[in-house]
Length: 476
Image (cartoon, one colour):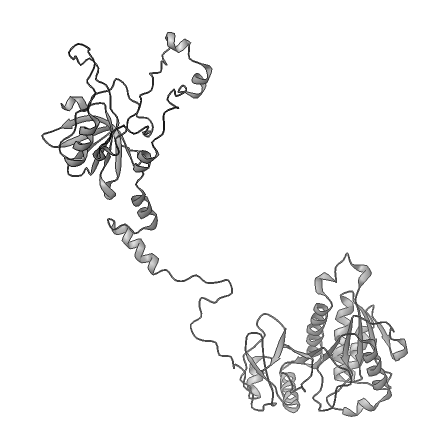
């Protein structure tokens, strides 16, 4: 009876661990309770070995995919093999793993591709579930005989001829049974209990750290200290940056002492004026629109900036800012009243400014009557508050209020009096002064004071600027 199995195509389910095998029966040994498959496929993939042998203890379920007809086996009266009973075969394949049902051999079988399951065998027994029946293909003549001469050009080009069994219903349920979903998902998830490597990968997945965003610091080892600047003399008002760092204000006299110490170590007035001019002009360029406004293709819409400067140190800071703005193709108009004698820093900045394309006027009548893009106010002085009573100061302040242009005030003094020119933006230097509560937005400029200079005057200092030279401040 074992010879009746040879040539039949079967599907052997060995459970989740070993999977499903398909192939042609090459040998059956009742003594050792083994069955061998020729040219086997494992879970739909062809095995690298030509033959696989299974023990009866490993077989969970056995299905017949293609039961072949016996050739040259004589029977009474017809000479054809008797067709086996599918019901009995299915029962033997499921109830007794060690006993295999009798099957017949086939005259031909192709094992060069995965098995295709066709219509389920008609039977009413529940034990025959999974039993399938396939119609073998016709043999193709490829060796140049008479049949080879009649092969179509399509067969010569594409190989196999047209399958004549396309009208046969496809057994979706039987074909799906060949796909071991549990084993595949177990391999993907790495949670198979039958593999130590899978357990190792699962442990590594549990220990994998959380992912971080691009703006998160993964090396942060301690919480951020938001009060990184402490001063011996508090100005009575505190500010904070966008990151939450606290920046205290200092009185003007202490601020003056800080600048004098920095100048002693080499941060001269000329260096400080140049740094203030660069930072304030960069802020002004941003307020004017930056790259959206100042492009080579937009030469007909150059912004106009008016600088209102007095004959003092704050005025020199404004002139330095105007020089850098003029270098960036901004139309700059400098208002500076005529004085017989002015500070050396003011005279030096005026000489440099005169070498630019910017204009300089000494009368308010020469200022434009139409609104301009930006006003930079440097009229006030820390040392002399009586300048507000001067006629040139009053006329310049009145013109600024009538022009209705946005105002940037550079280094304004601390005063309890009402601001003559209301500023939209205020730029402080180094450390802020305790400015009065107004609608102005306060910004802080880094003027290049070293950290040890802060420590020399008793300030515990850690730079709040980060990657910028001008940062906004908010009332704490």
